[in-house]
Length: 255
Image: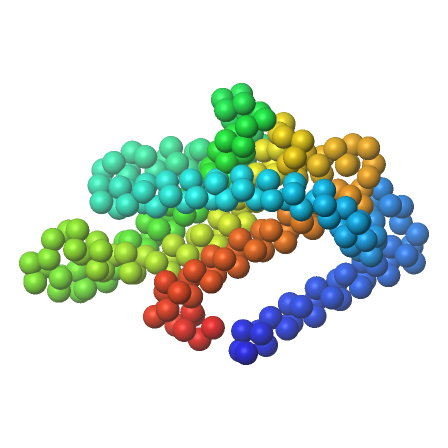
């Protein structure tokens, strides 16, 4: 109940923005190619649902694959960097430099590597976007364990593996889920951006791009709406997992 009350202001702002959007487009007679009315977008969203949702599901699977690959590699890299500091000092500049490159530059390169039609190229783009937030946050969490806790474990002759499993991992979990929530949104963005540089005709990004090219802007906006809903669904799944896995944390316990 508390969570619902907290979401009410956001819902009110959303309704207000959509209402203003609809009213201003009607009042100012804005052309459809500049900005369609929300009511038109919703109408197309419903009438073309048999085209939009299969395309959305195709892209969602690409985003989910990239999310899993990028997050998994991020957790693995954080574990290695946290355990071997010298190696981490050597690798961190490379990780940061790779993430500093605009993702739009990676998309055609991955297309050439993995075949522009293949979902693997879109997963690679999404994975690059997800990697650094997960790696940095997980590393921060692993290094946030209190020295007294580690000293206590060592006083009981605990091995480094036991300290990692019983102290560092539980400390890192809230940090990890914060990063996963960010990555869940980035994954959908990466998959769609990758599709703008070539992809299956069944993909949502291709559908949006083709609709815009032939001035079917309500259909393009309806595709964006589908992408938003799927991104929210993935984000919600991560939040639900966080409440199950990190039940002892204050933020999830009060939810």
